[in-house]
Length: 323
Image (cartoon, rainbow, N blue to C red; front, side, top):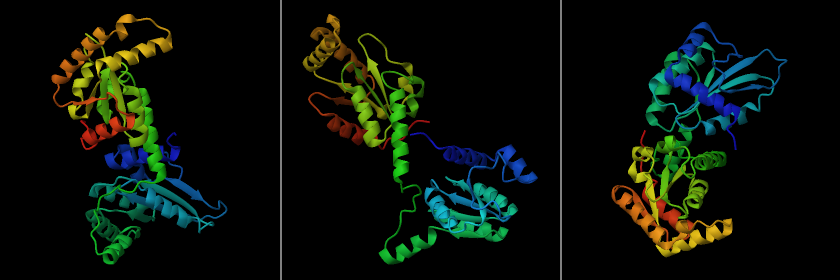
């Protein structure tokens, strides 16, 4: 699943808004047209090009803005004689970002629709928009207030908790793509971007585990093979050790799996599957693991992929990534 051009435009305009991009500021000062390449993150609804009426609507959110965007688009379908340009800005977090958006909306005599879970942001936009004379619509606040009264409970006020099916599918697709591109030691320069880094000797189920974790748990997984006498990649030391999962297995089982693999492929590398070699390779790996006490060591002997994955998730999902 790819990312839509609209989503790419949203991301582009969001970066300009958050960074105070010079070209963006210049365009705002000089006047933007509906065809501007600088301020074109939204979707332009042109219900009827015969009409000269043109409206501008800005959607703001401290999360993905997906909820607000859907509500706005649903409402706009009721106005099929008006052309409306909709710009969407997700992940709003500061007063400065609000001020830039409100300045542009005021210049274009537009309307702001927003979904802010954050109470400070809801207060700030109400004050700033009132001072600027910009009309606004709070799409989420009144519902939250009504639910507080009805449920006699306090909301968490945490942005981004709601995930749509498309959000979930996109995160799964991104995780799977990352995992495929970081299988078997590939892309080691991006290890710090991984949610989990799985290491271990050959045939200890690193790849099946990686694929299962990416698809089922939407985790970005990299896996790195270890071999007797071969030092691991230096990039591994740059990863938070709590995100590294080191696999081991009983020597007899690992030797048998390797032997079956050789028979299947029709190869005859006796050393690779020989028990003495396997034991020495495991000892080499175990010594490496002991040098990194923050790594999680998982014995996969006789365990299903699902069971191993659950064990891994219980250890690493709450660990923050290194930047």
